[in-house]
Image (cartoon, rainbow, N blue to C red):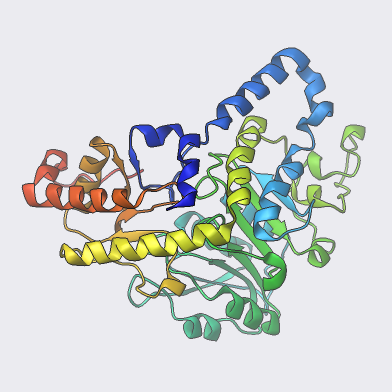
Length: 398
């Protein structure tokens, strides 16, 4: 018996859909309704007093929920609107002055992050991009050989978003440290589904979000900075929440706090922070080890089903290198994904990956078979043709 299925009733959308898209947007926990009502009631009844009665502390207080999942201590995780902003805060701590001005990453990173660092060339950054030979992963040795004494930052994804390939973060972090470089580890696709311990990894920076496997909704990104390093850094991307005495409204340069608030900037998006806790609490109670065990089994079964039905995948067969998603590279993948969604089988599609199918702890085993069966039926019956795009029109993916 699958003990994790007892949590299904906590997610309303599971009553009407086959939800296989947690890699993109985790299902909403039922208790988010209560939390969002609490936000509205607080605003309605307490007004401006709400800042002093809890809102001001939320960007770091809410971060403690993530800290418990990734192994950070209280006060070490701050909340931000998205990962791009969190990465920009990190980047703003550094000068790209030769000879140590290189930024090394792979072409399998999420594009938004790559765009950010490409633009840092205007501040002197020399960007080195290590290509993937197969569209699934990047050989660790290839990445290590690109990280040398000229390297300043190494922004890498723990799990690659297209293929769900798990990179050898420990080895990369250790080598970068020897070279004097700093690793920015993006755990958006791993937090909540693959066990993480930022202390054991001894990683410099960790960014991620609750949008996906943590079921916390949009607007809940997070940043962890290694404490001994944090005290030495002064981000250029800053604001009044980082000031040691923000309500003195001083002019001149910011005087930075010594705790997690140091990496905040302007006024936070409070409603998004209310939505974070229910999903994180469920993940914490279940335990990521148990979630990982189920995920490994279900993604293996998805790959078996795909192979049995003549479907090719762009996902590692090695369970130790496979995250929570199976990418099915099928002709007319975009159109097939649209028809699946129309039939209430929620998946997504990404170019150079295919149809991404992502079970989570609330997924029933029979839903794996149902999803592949439906995909094959759509392929064989050509039902996808209803979603064919006119010549020259590009797919609009979500």
